[in-house]
Image 1 (tube, helix red, strand yellow):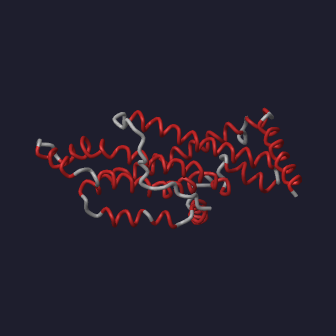
Image 2: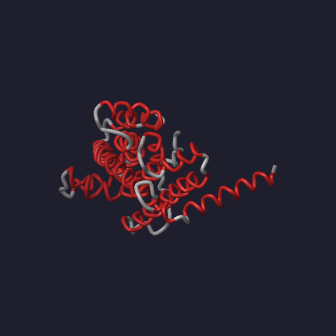
Length: 247
């Protein structure tokens, strides 16, 4: 049994090595480079759209300290709905209204996935700024907009960046589901590998997505250091733990 399992594992690794070492598998519309670029394009677009929707609203609610809990409850509904279910619902609508396969239904599902951690971290980060600091800023003659942008936002910035980081890693991982609905990203290798019993394709997609997720984590660690140089020691800034990707 052990020898059989070890042999299967070695065979899968060999198939992976053969696949990535074949130059023709890197080029063209179905090549590793093209699919990696498409995967990153979808992920970046999803994070940017979600951030544009969630972060300003969350900061405003956190500043006024009213209505935030209700908005947060509505936003968190996105966590209760698996991304696969969202894609299954959005796919026929996308076809019906002429948006086509792949990109647009997957984008909407990923945006809905990314909003909750961004909204929650930004809202709590601004809301929990020391009231004494806020009052002192107003006493110096600052208007509400200046207080939000020049006082509360810099203090809340570590939590805001953490929310974007958590959302980005989730989006990179979950974007693989788009392969089931016609999106030509790295997820296509995983589903093609399953369908064709091709371990080389399957592992290529899985390893590439894992590397992208790790790279995303490292990039945001660098952004955190650059954006918050006053944090001289490492703190656990994660308001939310990483959320398992729902399949």
